[in-house]
Amino acid sequence: MTAMLSLSDVTLIHGDGEDTVTALDKVNMEVEAGELVAVVGPSGAGKSSLLAVCGALISPTSGTIRLNDLDLSAQSPRRLTAIRRERIGFVFQSGNLIPSLTSLDQVRLPLTFGKVANPRDPRELLAEVGMSHKADRRPHQLSGGERQRVGIARALVTRPQVLLVDEPTAALDRQRSQDVVALLAREAHEHGVATVMVTHDHEVLHHCDRVLEMIDGRLLPAESNASV
Amino acid sequence: MFLAIRELTFARGRFALMGVVVALIAILTVLLSGLSVGLVNDGVSGLKRLPVTSLAFQHEVAKDSAFSRSVVETSAVDTWATQDGVAEAAPLGNTLANGRTNEGIEVDLALFGVEVGSFLDPAVAEGQRLAGEGEVVISSTAAELGISVGDTIELEPAGTPLKVVGILGEQHTFGHVDIGYLPLRSWQEVKAGVRAGDAAPERIYNEITAVAVRAADGADVDLAAGDKDAGTTSMTLEQSFGASPGYTAETSTLQLIQVFLYAISALVVGAFFTVLTVQRKQEIAVIRALGASTRYLLRDSLLQSVVLLVLSAGVGVAIGVAAGAAISATPMPFVLEAAPIAVATALLLILGVVGATVAVLRITRVDPLTALGGNR
Ligand SMILES: Nc1ncnc2c1ncn2[C@@H]1O[C@H](COP(=O)(O)OP(=O)(O)OP(=O)(O)O)[C@@H](O)[C@H]1O
Ligand SMILES: [Mg+2]
Image 1 (cartoon, rainbow over the protein chains, first blue to last red):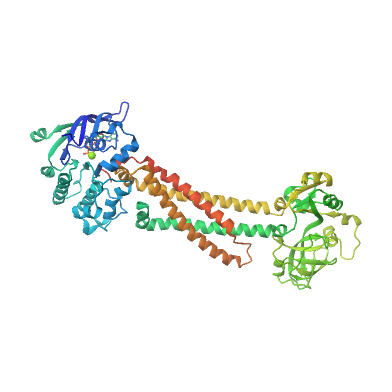
Image 2 (cartoon, protein in one colour):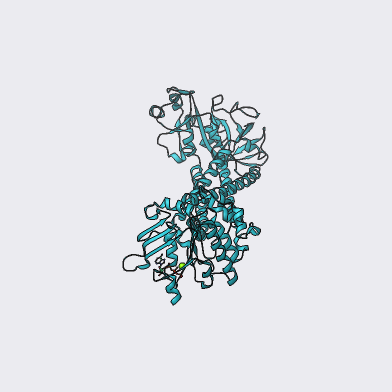
């Protein structure tokens, strides 16, 4: 079985000339469909950079990224936008919802960007993340956990192959954090989404299928983390 | 449209504020347009209503003061009458005068001296047409001052009496002064300052201000050739507007104000959407990260600005027209006409959209990467 998301020798260098930062250093990673992989690591290690290259927001300096056998480095910027729309879902820290939209419209939004082959029903999805009772609320009327749930529904409405999640529990208390990550694990497993979640929160790691640690741009397997 | 409409209703306070500004500019635009049409009418309505295609003034007369400076020999009239394509030519005298009626009403008149029975001799709405010397036919706007048929106007300083025999049907003004038509000989005496009853030197009856020329229907008169033969300098009727007192200064001032107004509205709309776009930067980054194309975002934001502009300009124009209707009823030189208002509104909208477009193009510079990581 081939991985849904695979990175081989991906290097990302920020800046140019003398003032450069190696955010990713020959990173290799494979994520299967339906797998939830957590990435932990200290601040500045390159976790957000990893999500950025996986999500086609930035092209790596070298190395290849494959999305279900589609090589991202061979695509035009316009095509990359379409790939983000059709195949990739993002969940951001603190939700990053659009202030003017109700919960239901947040979920509908990605379907207005262009044709989506087999979208999920926004109302059903909102019910699935437990937010249908607040479908008409705007972000400022929601709690942090509720915003994350809406954000997760928004990321999943296009049935992405890959879900990229950046610190989803940063603004949440312990119980909400558990609920949100449990929801992510359930969605990943039930809908076969290859999910990469960056987190600082070690208490949610038991929901994850695998834990990787990022240190200075290098990605290490979980075992080394356990020994620290 | 999905985002644009929701944003408009969500941030309605903000957009309403901008809408009010655009509406106020639209009101001002309508009022200025009414004022400029009104001023043009006040300045040259008398000229516009002359049944004339061109006027032949003194050779090389100063173009901007031709009416007050020009002196042409009456013989030029015959020369012009025989030019190819000319249907008729007639003498025209022009001078400004102050007068007072026997009722004590002070009145300023632009005296147009015409040959009785010529094609310049105007038809009247009330009273009689000109018949003999010492008579005058006045603009309807002079009648509004309280002057009526049968009154006598005594011109200063020579004390020449003119009997009001008729009143014209419409506004006939020249340089914001009501026109009084009088027989050419009477005009020539007034112009020369001859006191009533005094003998006048014969030469004054040879001098007129200009030759009024009416081209035959569809004919194209060669003005240069006519000027060469008659020793005159011709202006088309339109060109002669610029020779009437204050006309060029007024219209160019108003045009300048209008140009500034358009520029201001484009800048204000541009500044508003710039601030809006900057404030929405994070949101735009998120939307782009989620897979929206630049075109999607541009289309959405432009649509938003068009909706805002059309709605608020529409309200502004409606208010402006209502206010203008009220002003039209006053003696102010103010006339509402559909065409200039439509042009002004279209310009306002187009320049507003241009301003918004420049602002909204910032969207293309928002990096979707900023959606990730420690934002806020
Ligand atoms: N646009 C950029 N230009 C230059 N350097 C950058 C840029 N983005 C990130 N970096 C640098 O790359 C390195 C990795 O950054 P990254 O944001 O991926 O870290 P992170 O692991 O997500 O950290 P945190 O846990 O604080 O979010 C850091 O040293 C950072 O300063
Ligand atoms: Mg980060």
